[in-house]
Length: 429
Image (tube, rainbow, N blue to C red; front, side):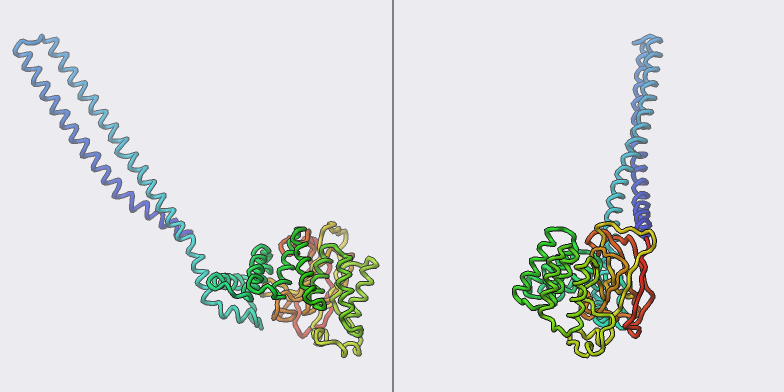
């Protein structure tokens, strides 16, 4: 912006100097020429009346009267020329100069105002391969928020040139959803589904984005997506789990219970996951709300863990965090508030590695975070170190964009610390 103002002032200075000089010279030249002509006419007429007086054609009184009138007319003409030269010769050229300067300044502003965006876009295209590698495999060098924005910009440019990449649209949508831009995320998921209508990941992400909008019509459409997927694959636990959680967040507990009970019919009875859902359903039905039925037991018997199927690999490897959330003194929660508990990188992308959302339950509450709660493939619990656990209370169902009413942040953790217990006490923001 400083460069813009310097350039604008230079343009005005360069244009003003020659214009004013030329205009001034022209006015001066025209003024002198007209003055000389008036004086010549005055002298000629004065000579004529003098000759008439000498020939006796007029009296002395008439001669003096005509001579006075000639002098008066010459003085009036000289004053009018001075006023006209100062008005038309100075004011109007300056107005013209002002107009030209404004146009030049606007052109400079348009060009230089977009220069930063052009440079950012060029930088994103150059760094895209490296950023993509670090996004998929964060390691010890995860993407910062600014780098994730750069990658999203480059990815959007690539999709604009070659829009037939369903997985690209899916990734772009998930990134936008992690920043809370639900409209952009929804549009991206729609583009992915136009290319691959049967893509389960795109359908589930689309339904989640719709459900997060807090609009009744969109929530109903999200439910219809889950129902369609279950017609195609009635025993798909991923779809049942997403559907149950969405309906639970929306307050349709009866439908959510039906989804979890359907999962119990599919999951083996000796699975810790089956036992956890059973126990949680019992608690929910006895008004102990807020526990996530998908969480695995904090301390399942060793014999049961040995029988855990492949889908429960996180529990076998110990990648889980038991989180107890309590409230500080004199804290009251709004009726339409939601509790969000998630794990995030201390320095890295803003999207959670694992997250759970629910209508505000009774506190204290204990739940469990695992890699099953990840928002993105290849970015699950422990993918970036160090990380921390956060509990937030937000107003309204749109937990991605709402400001936190109450929040608690745990200490830094590393993958080697898991499994572990984290205690969080909500305090006012």
